[in-house]
Amino acid sequence: MRIPLTGIAVARRAWLSQATRLIALALFLLPVACYPSRAGAERLKDLADVQGVRGNALVGYGLVVGLDGTGDQTTQTPFTTQAIASMLSQLGVTLAPGKDLQLKNVAAVMVTAQLPAFAQPGQTLDVTVSSLGNAKSLRGGTLLLTTLKGPDGQAYALAQGSIAVGGAGASSGGSKTQINTLNAGRIPNGATVERGVPTLIADNGYFTLELRDSDFGVARQVADALNHKFGEATASAQDARTVRVRAPASPNERVAFLADLENVELETVAPAAKVIVNARTGSIVMNQNVTLAECAVAHGNLTVTIQNTPTVSQPAPFSGGQTVVVPNTQIDVKQENNALSALPGGAKLTDVVRVLNTLGATPSDLIAILQAMRAAGALRAELEVI
Image 1 (cartoon, rainbow, N blue to C red):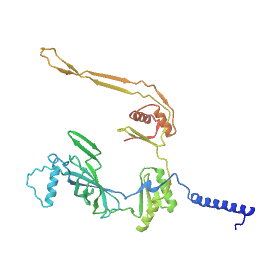
Image 2: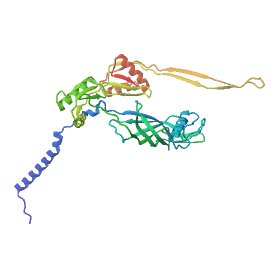
Image 3: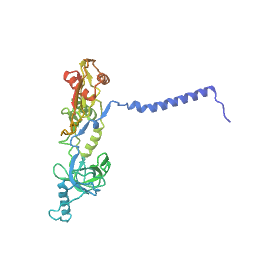
């Protein structure tokens, strides 16, 4: 039997239900209130590297075999035949003196790899194999055992394996089609480390942090953040790129300290105003701090058109003359007389882009305009041409 609720009981039940919802909402928002969002923060590991923790380049010379007639033309690449003879002699095969090898299934290659920091013997590396001679393709080839050496001439890894080539091509009857390159490929885990490189990260009890971009403000901010988290006199900025940090005594404490150090968050610092110009491709990239002062620009395009129409001069019959081709060249030069345009100053990146777009210039023309603006002092940014 169900007992009906009185008015007081109904009100009490509604109050309890509302209170329960408010408590649940407060518990949901509690982590947000306790851990505020750091939208403008960056981790220290994204801004700096520990000095000494870096990779080392390795290189080696080897042979790729098993090609389907796309190897080196040995008459034009004598180093390929020399390498083959040297390899066969090490395997107990002696070639007759003066023997001219005509092979099409072998290619001389350069093998490169990157030995990471803290690499130990037995660790595998990815290697890149690139043709050194005039091989048409390395597709389907196998790299023979190749020693990879460092700048000091010591062997640090051994590479061998089947090459994975990302390109494809076909030819027939003088026609040829190709996608990507066929003369380079990779061997995943194709090299085995035989010797490690000692990595020293603490010199006389101190780490050195190297900022990826030189900035006095960022260096000071890094030192202040580390001193605030780990105690005073922990870090000191040496210059615009390096920060010296006191290291713990034991190796285990150093690893834990570096793990915490890399996750220290810093407020984002506005970078210096810079415009990057690629003169080869006509690409222009600028950051948000670029501003433009008021200036006037006159822009005109010079167009030169050269048209060559050959005509045939036919002599009269029985005149003894010869039929010759006479060039008929026409040259037309046009220059647009654009008036001097007054450009208002822009305080934001969007304003700068809008102002430059009013000129109607191509990227190659904008490069010349930006250089002239920088020389005149109207472009408030560093102009870097790459």
